[in-house]
Amino acid sequence: MKFEGFITKVSSKSPFELECEDNMWILKQTPAKGGDNGVFAYKKYNVEDMIRELFKNAGLSFTVNALTKTNIGIDFRINNNTIAQVLEELRKQHYMFAYFRGNELRIGSEVYIDSEARTHKFAFQKNIIDDDLVYKRKDDIVLSALASSTNKVLKGGTTRDGHAKTKTEKLEVLATYQNGKFRAQVKLPGSHLEFAENTEGERHEFYYNNITDPNILIAEAKAQLKQYYYDGFRGKFTVFGIPHVKHGDNVVIEDDTIKDRVGTYKVKSVEYSGGVNGMRQVIELDYRINLINNG
Image: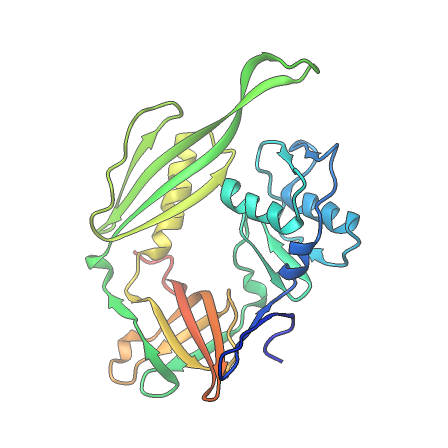
C-alpha cells in the first residue's frame, strides 16, 4: 500500500483526479482544547507534550514522537483553533514543522529520524526517468544562511497577577561559507542593521529558540551550513513508483558514465503522482550525507 488516508476531492475531469490527505485531515476538523484556559505555559509544557494533551482531550489515539522535547520559550495560546491551525501557527511563528508517519505525528527540533531511514539506489540511464539535478564542486559554491533565535527575556516589573513581565526578542546572524572559510555578522535585538541581500550562491534559513549568546548561534549556524558544502548533486529527479521513497530516507545516485559522481543524499521531500502511465515520484535532495564531515 502506497498511501493510507482520506479522499478529500474528486474532480470531474477525464480522466478523473483524486486528492488525498493523511491524518492531518482529521486534525483540520478537530477543535484544540487544553492548557489553562487555552494557555500552555512554556515552563510546564514543551511542544510535544502540548500536542499530546490536545490529542488526549480530543479523544484521538494518535501519538507524538518521543525523540525530542522542544521548548519555544514563550507561553502559547489557542483561540478557537483546530489542532491543524495550532500546528500551522507553530510552523509560522516558531518554525516547528510537523508531519505524520502512520499514526505518529512528528514535530519538534528533530527533522529526520535516521534510525528508520531506508536507503534506495537510483542511476542515470537506468531508473531515473527525468531530472533537473545539477552537479557542483564545493570550490564553486557560495553558501550563506540567515540564522535567527527567538528568545523570551525579562522586561522588568510584574504583571497584575504577579508574574514577571517578559518580551520576545530576536537574535540574528548572517553566516557565509566559501572556499572553506566561514564568516559571520551578528544583528543584536533592537539593532537597525540590514543584512545584505543574496546576490549569488545558495542562501538558507535556520531557526532556533532560546539562544541568547551570539557565539552559540554562530556555532549552530556554521555546523548546519557546512552540511551543504560538498561536491555533489542539487535539485530533484523523477523515478517510478518502486522502490517507494519517503521524506527522510537516503538515496544513492549513481552515474555509470562518470564514476566519481556516486553519492548518498538525504531526501528533503517526495511528490507522488499516478495515472494511466503508472506511479511517479519526484524526489528532492537536501544534502549529501556521506561527506558531511569533509572540508
